[in-house]
Every structure is written in structure tokens, then in C-alpha cells.
Length: 94
Image (cartoon, rainbow, N blue to C red; front, side):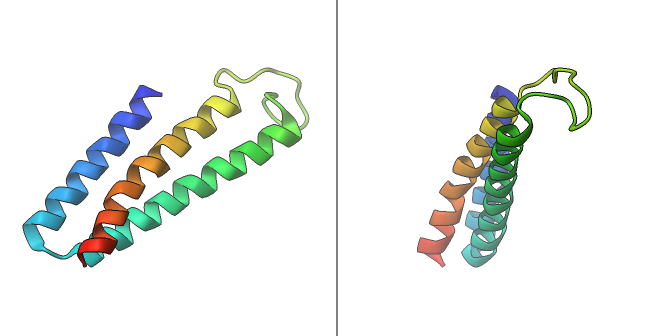
């Protein structure tokens, strides 16, 4: 979970530095908002997939996954929440 948080915070840092450097906050809003929506969509898809399949590897096998789907979805939610910060800043400052 730390790896996704560190990656998302690095993206936030890059987006904020781009926004402050160029004063193009509309670009920051589009990029951060789009990435945040993609991460939230992936998390929602994985939660639905966990509801259908549980923690099995695939539909036709009963092998357990090495990383649970709920842990993987939580990583996407963390990234989506972290990307909402520059998206809101870009929306307010554009």
C-alpha cells in the first residue's frame, strides 16, 4: 500500500510543480482529474470483480491470488484520493 501512496504523491508533486511553474492550472485539473477518475474506476471494477469471484485467480480455477483483490482495490482508492488534491487545486486556481 505504501508503493501506491508514494507513486501517487510523486504524481501530485509533479502536477503541483507544473502548475506553479507554468500557471496553467487547467492542465493540472484535466490531468489529475482524469487520472483520479481512472483510478476510481479501476477500484470499482476490482471491488465488483471481488464480489463475483472472491479471491480466486480466474473464473475457471480455484487457485488463490497472491495479492487479494481488496488490497489491490484499496491501492487504487488511495491513488484516486491523492490525485483529487491537485484536481481540486487546479479547479480552484484556473
